[in-house]
Length: 379
Image 1: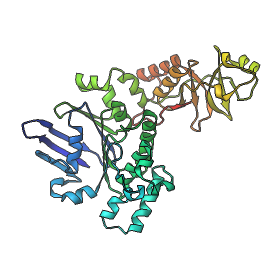
Image 2: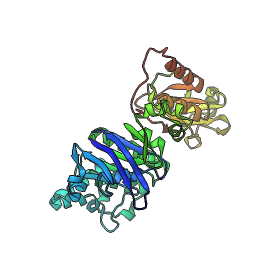
Image 3: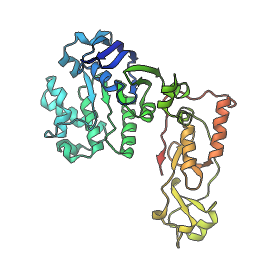
Image 4: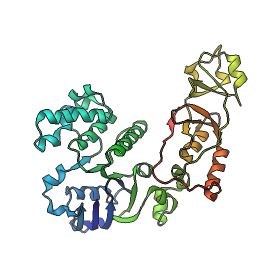
């Protein structure tokens, strides 16, 4: 556990960056620090590994005051991930990852073997080991940054806006990969972000800081969305928090059978199966997308399929089901099973009826708690 006890950081001239923050970051969980610019998120993070020294108060690492731990030893025992990876540009990828193990006195052969092992863990091919950071994409560099932080298997990781420097699609992929890794490794993590959606997706616990470095609220993501502590938290979380809270409510939505066609089927068959001008194209039981009858030629062509819309998994978050219905060009959300095979479609009104049943308790089931189990994926 990482514990902040009335931690304050005051700079010369009187500026207060962090003001008497008291906070527990539980062992094996992700605690996210979120808030507007100037609220002391990064300062709080950097005080954990003493890159910034607190003015007053204490930070405890498993009941040990970090002020009593020599700085080099403290930092070597904590993984640290920053924006854009923070890689050494003139060192190979495997040398970048092996940095901390080598500092700890590992034999070079062992350190490089660990580096190559971690490339696989973070989803990068082994041949990247001998490349240099400039030869990698931004998303790949972020993966290397995570691998480097994991190299010496530290129990604690600090992450400062780790996914902010990449495009939205890659960012989502990195977040999902990060959650997968955390599910396997169970590190104690403090992560800084300015993005409330990222905080809600990644955090087991979310700490909202206000400008001036004061702690406004600490809560689970679902508690934060349902019960913001005051107007500041409500405004920061956003007025659409009710919709986002559906990420933590799971339910079985009523699906309707949906006629489909396959690539290569004739245009007449596709028109006969179209509803409101749209027909769903599927292959081997897996949905590919929607095709409008105006786009048909002699036969169904996969390259004319509309890729708009998302997929929802039956039994997953109701937010995913509602998003699938609202984003679908046909107005019918595609619902699949856990293996990605088509079950049918659902309309927004039917998802909203399920939401209302959960809200009133008429299903007899309590809303699901915890992080969303299935993010919508593009189709």
